[in-house]
Length: 110
Length: 115
Image (cartoon, rainbow over all chains, first blue to last red; front, side):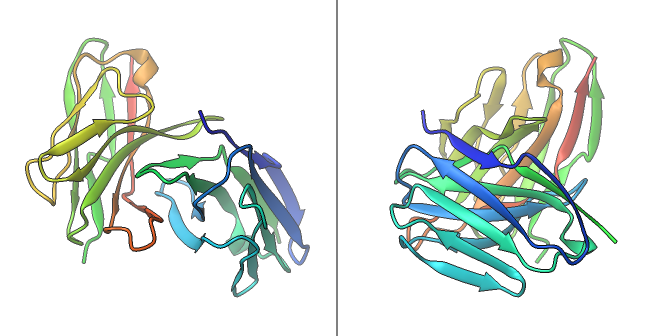
């Protein structure tokens, strides 16, 4: 059974700070996605990465896929209260199903 | 497009009752899935479907049934509700994957409490 570990589980920071969230697996991903979920809503896809070493940017969010495709990171620059939410990574393993991590709950205070 | 819609938004059941959670999508996506989300457990796949008439089990299928008679609809049936099924349920749809990425488009969820 593939396992996806996210760290940290909880993160509470002040507006303007930078942060990094990590997603690790013991297996090689065929692809990896990051989602953000706000309270009372379903997760929303932020990005998909498929190539080892790939870096994608979405405004203040930078996503990196590890060279060996076993890990990924999400870096937020100058966090804002609107970034508050649950961040989930999800890995594909050459099947038609995704495995989700347990999530990182981010709180950004003004 | 409405995207993925789910009804009801909230539901309270007594142990032993049955019910159906509805899910519909208007994006003509082939793949549809049901997940449950519990604190500290992330999203776990219950059942999924790769097209009308085809369903398969996910990680936690016991106590749930599904069917897929049309591309648009994918209802989830709880046969005899148990307190362990108290959770938030999400339906998701996925377009035919171009690169095998299976990107999920989620509905707003159904919060179910079983007493």
